[in-house]
Length: 223
Ligand SMILES: Nc1ncnc2c1ncn2[C@@H]1O[C@H](COP(=O)(O)OP(=O)(O)O)[C@@H](O)[C@H]1O
Ligand SMILES: [Mg+2]
Image (cartoon, rainbow, N blue to C red):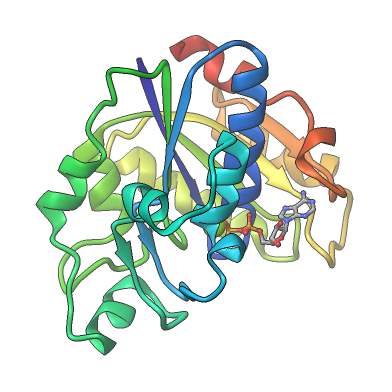
């Protein structure tokens, strides 16, 4: 039974794409998998299949229905804002201890993947960030980063924050951005030099997750 947290240097970087890829690859390798997206903002109940939770349920081979979405995403907010602000707009809040307890080990599966929200330092409420959530879980993190101009500083800042709190970095995936000043390989090589010994893999822009590179080597040491 292993748990992994999928985080990123920012929003829209590729967490859901990577999480659904990992679900597919783990299932193909014969592992039982569960995936959670505990907090979602910008959630439109009229289009559940377009939500992160819907994408993850599809990768898990489960129907996209309200009951299953509620099961993997208990905290859903309509405004596409940071969780603290989106919750505030609905006069709600995300109870931190309940959030951590919700991510407890699922004993009936081999692997539980937990997709975070936004980047490492996004606020969940007035005093907690995603990093606090991660620290409370104390599980390996996969960090998804981009290939855009500026990603080096964003990536190394995120890694620095993770390491300053003693978090285990299982690996970094450099996901191709729409606009890149240099190749993915060049970006990944620089990142790799600064984050040793964490492994760094590349993810080109693809039509679908089935063409993605094999990411299981990042999880293998913990399985
Ligand atoms: N490597 C990729 N190839 C093709 N599409 C991608 C890739 N990475 C991300 N996307 C797409 O880009 C958008 C943002 O990615 P997503 O995984 O939803 O980001 P996040 O979960 O970090 O907000 C989604 O539509 C996703 O399908
Ligand atoms: Mg997502």
